[in-house]
Image (cartoon, rainbow, N blue to C red):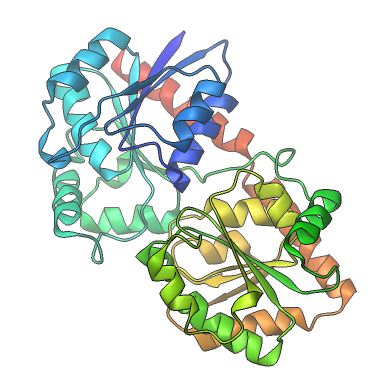
Length: 378
């Protein structure tokens, strides 16, 4: 039995955190046993992990996380788990978890990178962590797994050894993310949206990297041409309690077109209530929300960042980042398509995810890396 200790910065609902939960549920239980260590606290993903029967260890480290590579609580936790291999997720956990696992516990380490840029727009502390990871990338991890090719390229430029770097795209389970027309109609009825309205999903979170100002500017342009459009905003921070969001919304005339739903677990129903998806990010690696929406048959319009263009392929349109006019134009172009064209885009979206971004494919490749690394260090 291969026991894997996953070390992650936290368990809130980001793409890397959800991919971790999916991965541990998809790998064969007859061969792999998983433990998850959160350097900070609990969150939405912690509950999902426990539902899968995965032990979750919370270290509650709140301050100076980047400087605590020899933290006693983490070393003790690793000693108690006694893993065969350590997988870290996100840069702070790569640094802190990698140091503790490699130099204190003498364990093989696999880093996980889920950020496409080199932190130029990040805080100074995160930039320091990223710089430290680049310096130590030849000494700590046996392998570095990137969720996108753009992420791999950015880190190789920063100094990561190419021979240790491997791209494993995130994946989704198609049977979990399948369009459900009945649930979609129920969502529309609950929100008072006419059955024939054009509904656009904005599955994101309130964060500068998602560039919500770009979204609202594009939405205003779309509504000027198509006042019948309705927007479903769902994700952490996309609700009326967010003062900054409400300030942005007040700048748009047709405010009743925006449904602020916040974090939701009924993602399939919300995608099924929508006709297309929109993402306005200034930076991404490989967004899970686009995979989920495409698996539910949504064509997407999104900014050309990270590996988004490769992900969407022929099932939507990518436009330059920070260009609301281009976003609006691309949305309106798809919106004017006839039913046959929309049906083709929907089928292309589902097919693309099934062929290239399945969860089973991702899990198989992670398992292969773990076996390979353990064979090298045996």
